[in-house]
Image 1: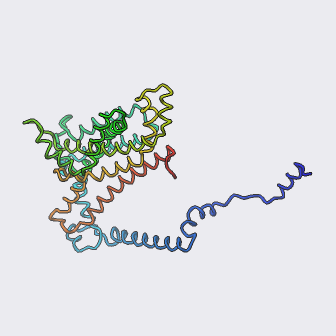
Image 2 (image 1 turned 90 degrees about the vertical axis):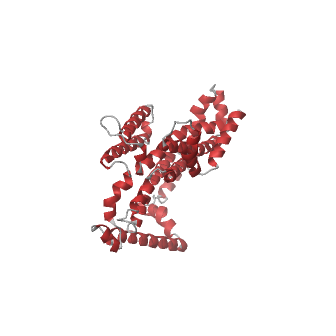
Image 3 (image 1 turned 30 degrees about the horizontal axis):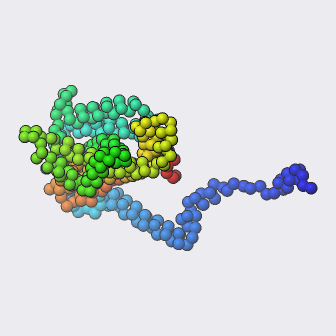
Amino acid sequence: MTTATDIAEAQLKMPALREPSVERRLFHRTLKPLFGTPVNAIVTLACLWIVWLGIKGAYGWLVTRAVTEGGAQACKVGHGACWPFYEAKLRFMIFGVYPYDEHWRVALAMILFLGAIGITMIPRFWNRNLLVLWGVTIVATATLIWGGVFDLSYVPTTQWSGLPLSFLLSAVGLAFGFPLGVVLALARSSKLPAIRVIAIVFIEVIRGVPLISILFMASVMLPLFMPSGITVDKLLRAQIAIIIFAAAYIAEAVRGGLQAIPRGQHEASSAMGLHYWQSMRLVVLPQALKIAIPPLVNISIGFFQDTTLVTIIGLLDFLSTVRTAMTDPNWVGIAVMEGYVFAAVVFLVFSYGMGAYSRFLERRMRLGYD
């Protein structure tokens, strides 16, 4: 008969199981998927070779063969990046036709705006104090850019241009389009036929036409329906068009999140005595918005890039200022690559930042994967 003592002695004689070393764990996590099989090894080496060629070419263009002084004439005979172009046109590409001596106002306004966004992105600051923060930020930003008070010269919206204009159009459009989109999603999911039909018609009509058409209608057609003597600022018309367009797409993303919520959640909230709006605000909508994070971020990235379309209605967005800088007679045909590379880097930084933040939210809410 085996006793407890015999079992204990047998366990002591068994070889101890050791945890895999750090090197072994690193191999299994990284190197084994890359070089575990001959096919994986060939693909990995080919990709590394392509990456090396890209890095080598970029370094040569930016550093080794780059022209750092001498102006346009030196760049004309050079074979690398034309850094004098950035020195001469960087401020114009960023701020556009905004008065040169007042660029500090736009820069300060953007710092305040981005700072408020940065604070908003930190979950521990998600409380009602954010409303106060954003109220102060919006007033300060409008005062700095618009002027007309505190000895600041007035700058009309026709001179708002460049990167600040693109950023404000997308940020304000998404900020106002989000609550409107949530309302439209709830209306489309409503049991009241009249409200549901109105929401469906609005969403499908707006999503059925490109943004460029809505911008054109807001800029050209809307003034025709206004009473005589009443005009609406061109920038405001473009902003309203972007808000409406964003709301329609956000509504569909939120509706997808609402449909993913199990029916039991609605029944449980009803069993707790919550009426419709309490159930939506406290139970259903928070879960639906968590599910809709990836498509919402995708919409945000797309709209930031789509602000380049406002050039068709006469607004000088960021990409338009880059193109205008390249058409300067002193630089035409010389700094083509430099301008588009700068624009691509700016769009990449903002788009990657939004994507990285969405992944952070997914991990924090346990909806994504590391």
